Image 1 (cartoon, rainbow, N blue to C red):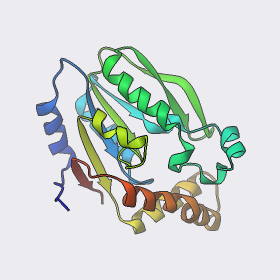
Image 2 (image 1 turned 90 degrees about the vertical axis):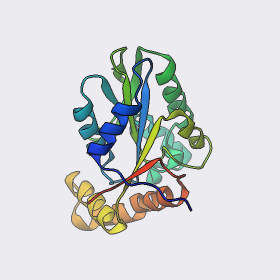
Image 3 (image 1 turned 180 degrees about the horizontal axis):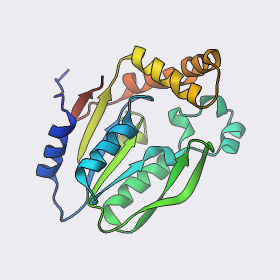
Amino acid sequence: MPSIDYINIKELLGLIAKQNSLAGRFIVAICGPPGSGKSTFAGLLLKGLGECAKVVPMDGFHLDNRQLKNLGLLHRKGAPETFDAFGFLELVKDIRRTENLSFPVFDRDADKTIMDADNLGPEHKIIIVEGNYLLLKKYPWSYLKGEFDLSVYLEVSDIDLEKRLTDRWTAHGLDPISASARALSNDMANVKYVKEHSILPDYRVAQV
């Protein structure tokens, strides 16, 4: 297996500045399992890049809870099959060819997708796409890699991920036992899937 270089956020910012051509949009993928800190890392990149950058989260393509219930997938919410993968792929393609573009955002507190909640404008030249399944080998996710100019995978140990995911559910009001059960029964299954079924990124970031 070929080795993949590790990179820190300062080096990544320099790399984006060097490779980015302001003639068109430059798309950076931030991928990693649930709880790996993708949103936080994307936010730090956004802060370092300034107003020319924008974050587009994959989570806006969660299928509606009623649809998941009808499909018998509500208990697996967050797994690859519980997202509108084709819709997300079309959005990523549109990022390249459409200057003014709205996109959905997932409201975690309300547990629902808000359509057209955010937008891209012509001033947004660097797009940071973040999500669990950006590098999956599985169709149609596998077509995403070709749309990215740069891909980065956040590497975190299973022990740390389990703790973070349990803490996340505790923060959402579950008692410690229920939070741990929720993390182990669904989230960690998704962690395993991401780690076992993702193609190689351009770079890795070792999270602490």
